Length: 429
Image (cartoon, rainbow, N blue to C red; front, side):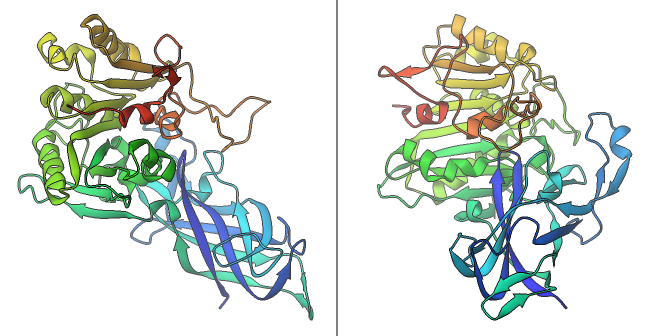
């Protein structure tokens, strides 16, 4: 049997990935003794039941094309190798070696999430790390090492998140949540509603399928005062846009409204330090639909809303419903290249109706396209990696949404402000 190894999983712009593999060496390794070619890394990916994961040969919105599947296994690319401590921190010399793994939408084999039974969920990844080059050490050289037993996985972005389930008998919702640890008696609550892929049976996917964990980061928590903010991420068994069929229905209705409101009310009751005047709601795609649906159905409950690539067709919003939210602070985000939920049929006309109704605090970060602005993926022919236009939650979680529909900065007290900063400045009273 080979030696054991550790992995580190980070929640990135494109979901959770293995970013580091940490190898206990049993000897002191000095800087420069290892490089990206010292080890090979082979991965076999298994579904939650332990069966071989099968994935489409190529991603497509064509159901027939998605039936052409292959086994999900192969080699990962090692970008860098260095001596480290057990947590993967680089050292001049150390008893561990850390391998930095290439990851992102261009390197899907490193992903810890996959679509199983129609929903994204965490999978099992089995790695075999094989030594290819001798490693000089004080009394000779390390040779022929093989690591094939995972000892532990570090998930630093998920620290502090907890999973639970509501007690609403008619339709209990699973949810993940984060409790802020800062001082202060009263703290706001940020609610995030997942997209279609993150429903189902793996609660962690509701906040790790996309980079929802950014809401619990120190940088974003600081926008809500020194105490920080609670974060709540409820999950449906099907889709927010399910009005009873078990499938996505573009009719403006949902069967989950009472269940979601009951889940929120129960969470607020369980956490009396939540400031009921500072409850914010947002979500992407299916969750953007549900965000708009909730503010229309409960217009006096939320302090602000931030729907992203929202999927509630404007034609299903009545003038009376719009009247109810004409004073509610709302910040839309979408991209002109979104062909899955074209903003011209959804967010754009709703935004314009709110402007015409006199909403004094409605904004719309309308992206020309969604690009990798932070170097996660390699440039192609000197151009930034471009994501599918529907993925406008990526700039939201990277705090890049700081401009309005006209392309000009959104200002607060004369200073540019982002949507996440903007949220923290709102209260119902």
